[in-house]
Image 1 (cartoon, rainbow, N blue to C red):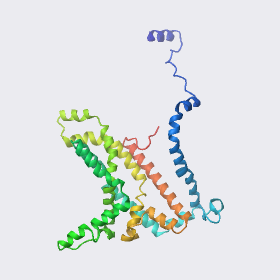
Image 2 (image 1 turned 135 degrees about the horizontal axis):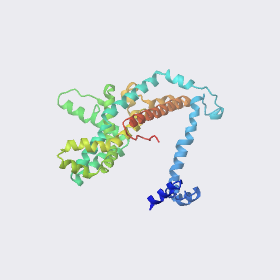
Image 3 (image 1 turned 180 degrees about the horizontal axis):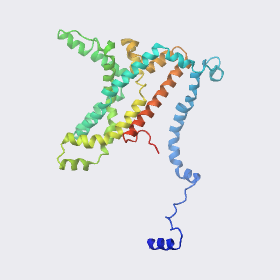
Image 4 (image 1 turned 60 degrees about the vertical axis):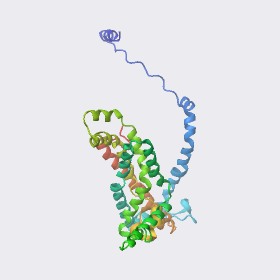
Length: 328
């Protein structure tokens, strides 16, 4: 019937009838009336973001001022342009903090980032549900420990009077205090991060593994694919979008390697090894009262993070992944 109508319209020189018109789009009042419970549930989080993110972001203006909170405040402090940024790049402490931060980020990107992936694959391969639940509970638990407790545990294990040092002394060998050795500090903090956060980080990859169709594994097994081949051709491609997404976010967070972990161990290894970006902002901005200088450092950190996310997202698009956001 539709074909006959089209032919008749064509013979008459008219335009064939198009598809049925879409339903009328509801007005914003109708949408508000329909979705107000959802908006109400999101209101606390919106207020939280507004109060602790967007409104404080206006304070970045002090990075361009000779800011004094006691005399002029934001409205009364003189504008000095990019002077704080110029002083920032002339500060050897700042350059050292940048080098230490990027070195730690690169090291952890190689030696920490794959650990949650491997842990998730290991947990997913356990056949016993009870054993899987027990192992998950054990590896998740350190995430809820404070850094004070984590550093104290490592001190008891690897400190000068710790368990490892006592075992070495009992066997006639020289004990090493790993907690005060600046040369191996990057290994120490990476080990602490793996022990504390790897179990929790594996949750995301376990969730991604649960979305892979089990029929793919069965079909591959029927075709003769062994365990490693199934993991290479099914499991890892299924995890690739999540891996790319988390890698982009990690690169965007490259200048944020932590604060408490380094502050707690700064006196033990010295500032040469433990000075990172966040501790530099604390010591040079908050402790000295030069808030404009500290705000300039923080604004530089945010700008670098934004550029890294955009660059990494473009690389993800080049390899066919969606990334953090996709181009329309």
